[in-house]
Length: 117
Image (cartoon, rainbow, N blue to C red; front, top):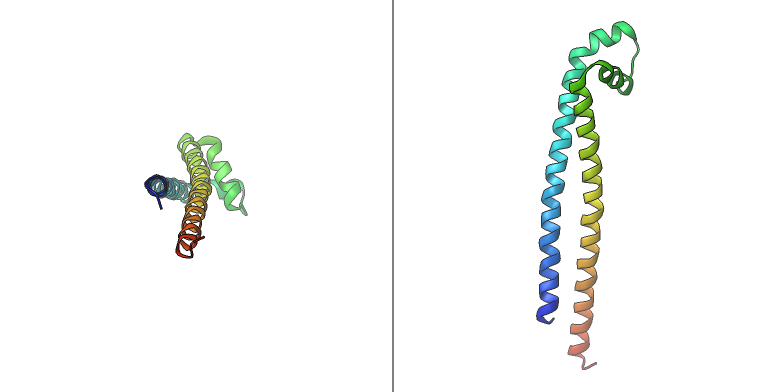
């Protein structure tokens, strides 16, 4: 493995670590927003159930967002952070695939050098 390949592999690993940190932060923000929405929802359930006794969770959240701007902002944050961490998953997997491909190539080249190919 030459120095350029080592640097490329190191750079890829560092980029993957950075993406993993962003992923962690997005998951935490998603969980925080979801928890806050759930707390608001539970506090509002008596009022919502008075309007619609057999309301499901998704409909209850929508009914809550009709009049509660905090719930609207939390739901928006939840959806945006959720989309962000799902996108980061794809990027992390792509980095991992490239790292694996480079490692395989390096092993192939090293075996060729061992056998005089």
